[in-house]
Structure formats: C-alpha cells, structure tokens
Length: 302
View (cartoon, one colour):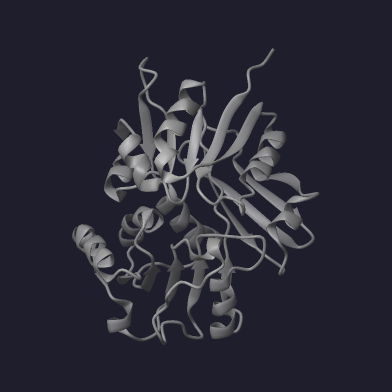
C-alpha cells in the first residue's frame, strides 16, 4: 500500500482558505498520494500543534497569518532568505535523524517577484512601491523587492514605529523608508501585505497614493473581490490585480513544471519556485474562487 504524504496550511482565521481544494487538484493531476489539511489554531497553540503534526509524520506545513514570525522561532534551521526576512512561511522536517529538527523557509518574496515580473510582465526596476503592512507577510517580500531593483520602497503601517523598525532593518539593501503619508504622491505599485482583506476591511492607504497608472496587488484573497481591490477599482478604473498565492512544500521537487487551470475564461497559472513552491495567480471575471475550483480541469503546458 502506498503511503499518503501529509501536508497542511496552519494559521488562525482560515475560513477563506481554499488551499485543500486547490492542492487536491494538483495532487490529482500528478497522481501524488497526498493529504492536505487545514489547521486553525490561535497563537498560544501554534508551536505545540506544529510539533505534534511533524511528530505524527507530517511532511510539510504552509504557515500563514498570524504565525509566520512564531514559525521563525520554532524552526531549528533557517534558509538564508528566511533568516533575512525574519519570518517563515514553510516548515519541513530538518535534515538528519532528529525528529524535532525543523527547516524553515520563506518563499513569499520569491513568489511575489516571479508573479509580478513573469506572470504580469511588470518591470520592478526603478519603480516606486508602497508596501502596506509590517507583519510576517511584509517581511517576506521586502528583500526580494529591493533586490529586484525597485527605485523606492515605502512601508505604511497603522503602527508607525513598527514600520520604522522594519525599514531600518532592511536599509542595507536599498532605498527603503517608512511613512507613505509623508512621501505623498502616486506610486507605481501598491502591495497589500496586511491581513485586513481576511477580515473584510480596507487597510490604511495614504491619500493620493493610487493613480490611473498604479498597479494594486493584494497578497490575500477571499470568496469574492477583497475590499482593497474594490477600493482600487474605484481609484484606477480597472487597472488592478486579484492574486491568489498557493504554496505547497514537498519532500522533493514536485513534477508539475508549469500548470494552468482554466475555467470559463478565468485562469490560474502556477510555477515551481525552489523545492515544491507554487505561486498561483487568479485573474477573475468577477468570479469567486470556490466557483472557479468547481469543475476546473488541469492542463500541463510545455
């Protein structure tokens, strides 16, 4: 009998998540015997729950809000990009025989940059970028954005001091500052890295930050258009993107190559980044994600 590889996404407030369904489709398309679950736990139970998952034979966890910084502390070994980010979004059993060893990685930034530059054809070099939020999701994307050549990166957060500390931490990598209000003016790209969309709220956006040529990118998704993207539609009259990031972590490279899920004119494109990292993009025809998943077929593209 073939063993079943166990994976899951772990976070708190996961009613929006369609990760199990999406990964089930990927597994079916490749013939992988895989079980992908959803673990919703508060911060106080994160470490114990994650350790129990791996001690029970789990192969990998995707870590989402609000546990990315806690996952950093839990990992016994970090990849260079996770250490630089100060946050972890994937956990896997560490190398060696120690059952308690955990490897922490952060693929948020690599996925975001690839999605922007490859899937969207967006040029980061010289662009003026506003990053909303200063939590684990924001931490994961700052270094790759600066390394991608953005001309200016500003962090805007409800707690100004936290944005300032984050800007200082990454100041060695390029032109980064906090305080989008003080900077003023239109940005080329606005990235929502807050969890506001998951709560059905609009994150704080500086006045006049969004103009007719601004690309608005939401790192979160829901069953319908997020409040942030609804706001962006009103600001830019249509130049916006609804993105869905799908990540999976496997014990070895997954045999996906590039896959495309198509359904009634909408599409999801997924590309491997590193070991088993999938970044998926959903450009919607005002269609909910759960409607897309139902009846979707998988095609392999060469």
